[in-house]
Length: 82
Image 1 (cartoon, rainbow, N blue to C red):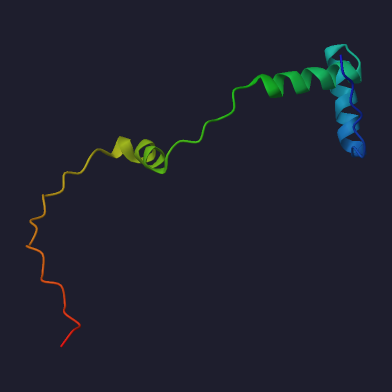
Image 2 (image 1 turned 60 degrees about the vertical axis):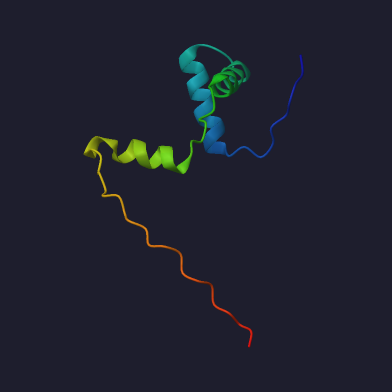
């Protein structure tokens, strides 16, 4: 197994880790290992498309039916010549 060293941890964070490890009845190293394991075993949230996010946010309000727009024929392109 590999090992890592974590430097420059704030005193308050180290103290909280020590208290949490004591609460769970294990060493600080075991507690840190368990925290890393549980954090990295979670499935990362997959970003959805913008359309899916908007639809999910407003779907409870109900849909809106818009009338079909009639299209006019295309205009003749402008001529830039003589």
